Length: 195
Image (cartoon, rainbow, N blue to C red; front, side, top):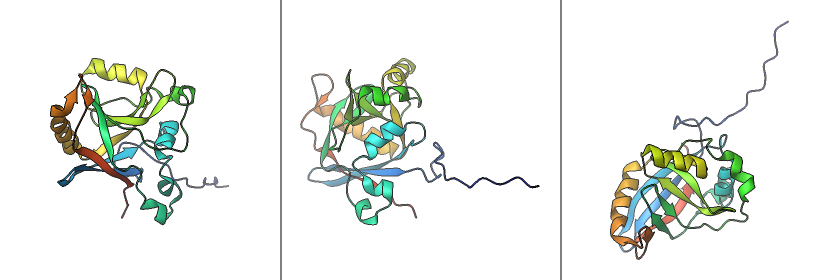
């Protein structure tokens, strides 16, 4: 008797860039000059589901396939908050709920940090609604990030824009790592349409 074949289940596979992994486009603008560039990230739903849930909370169109919701922007007019050797932090987003430290703690270290990895910011008791782009390849800094933060995505297009943006933000650094008076903003974050 032939064995029964299991129903085929659609799975998300991280890392290949073309496996139907959810991709989001970050549109960067320079105030008064228009679009500066675009950064596309894919998110790792299987490896960091709670972190991805926090990111997707304000993007229901990407989750349920609603075409009308898909056109809604996830972020509008958000500035970059901090720039360190380790990464570039993006400001808080408006989300319907947040997750406690315990909710996501077991996802720490599941995905290793590297240049272009996107990770959640945190305090000692909770996960912030902000995130950062990892900009370092220093082994010690990466090991430290792996022990403290939850990575949930990676840049699949626009890494050159990210590093150009880092250089453009350097004149706006105050008090060591705080960005003040920068004309660079994230104007929108949208689910990238698959064709």
